Image (cartoon, rainbow, N blue to C red; front, side, top):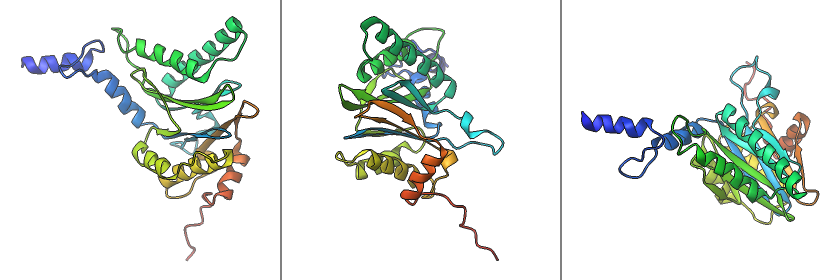
Length: 251
C-alpha cells in the first residue's frame, strides 16, 4: 500500500524525482508530443525546410485554421507537434524574445540563442509546483550569420541541434527515412523533396495539399516564406506525391 502511495507521489508531483531519477510528468509530456501529427525539419546548404502534417479531423473544419508552422522573426520559422495551445504560448514567448533582442541590441536574434531562451522557459515548468510541463516539441529553423541552423526543443527543456529531424507521430519511421536519404549537399528544393517524401512514406505514398504545411528560410535572403495551397500542390506534383483520389475504379 505504501509503495502504491509513493508511486502516485512520483506520478503526480512534477518536483519529485522517482528513485531511478525520472520525472514522470515530463515523460507524459513527451507522450503528448507523440500523439500530435508529425512535423519535419531539414537543414540544407541553401536554407531550412519545415514541413508538417496538418490533417483535419472533419471535412467541416477550415484547414487554414490548423496552424503548425509559425514565423518567429524574418529569419526564423518554428514548427510544432503536440498540444496546439501549448505551442501558441511558446510561439508568443519566442516572438517577444526576438523583439526584445532587436530593441536591446539592434540586431536580429541568433537561432541558437532563441532556442535556448525558449528551452530555459520550458525548463522552469519542470521544477515548479502547481504547474505542468509544456506538452509540445518545437522545431526551430533559421539563418544565423549566413548559416542554416536547425534545433529541437524537448518538454524537459533540453535543446538539440539537428541536420534533419521529425517530431510527433511516427517519429521513429520518419527519422529512419531521413537518416537513409539525407544529403548534406542538397539545395532547398532537394530539402523540400526529402521532407515531403518522408511525410508521404507514412501516408500511403501520397499527400493532399490541404493536409500539408510547408515553409522555408532561405540562406541567401535570410527570409521566411510560408507556401500557399497552389505552391504546395506544385511541389507535390513535381515529386509525384499528389493524391489525385483516382485509386477507386469505376465498375
